[in-house]
Image (cartoon, rainbow, N blue to C red; front, side, top):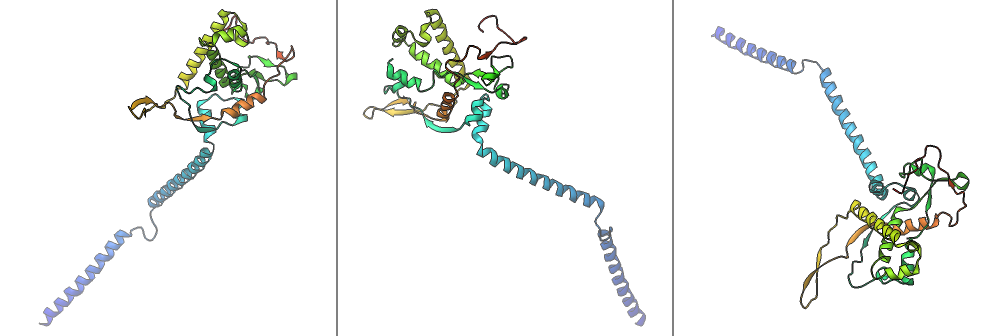
Length: 285
């Protein structure tokens, strides 16, 4: 009896000691590195923290640039779609929502038959403004070559140039003047382009026509013309020409061009003669 009891007690103690030793060994396996994490673990944590910091920095940079560009979106858009020039720098291009007047039968002053009031309306758009001065430091960025015509330094230097948008309006005005119901009026007056013979007038008109063709194709409007209903008694579909557009601040550009016109009667030596090596064309391009 005593031996059996002793054997049972020994077995229990042995089992308890074995279980505690096994548990200690398992804990030792789990924490084999002691209290300090391994170098691989530290390196992985450092990489993760670095990536988080980089992503956070890039996010902040993106927010800053996003707010800046949102505030200067007009300048960003105009520089992307238009040739840089002094006009862009000094005027500051802005865009505003405008509705086009697309009426078919209701004519505004710009559509009426030739006459002094109509001519005055077109003149008010700057169709006959003189050229402006592009400073030498803006020339290359404005698309002007160093061997193009220059103004003498004693008269301020720079390059004589015309605002291209106003030249487009000049061309549109010439097409208006050359319409079959206006042509005789301007031909008889013999002013402006009509001081030339018919051959040159015709070439001038076709030059303007093609300039406007290229401009319209270059800046093709991707908007759409929907249809509206007209005549309540017997409804018919009709194209809705009065559409919304994002337009540049034309009046600001025109005011700048008006204020910066070159002299009406410049001195005879106003322009710098071509220098040696400057390109001189054998005929009109």
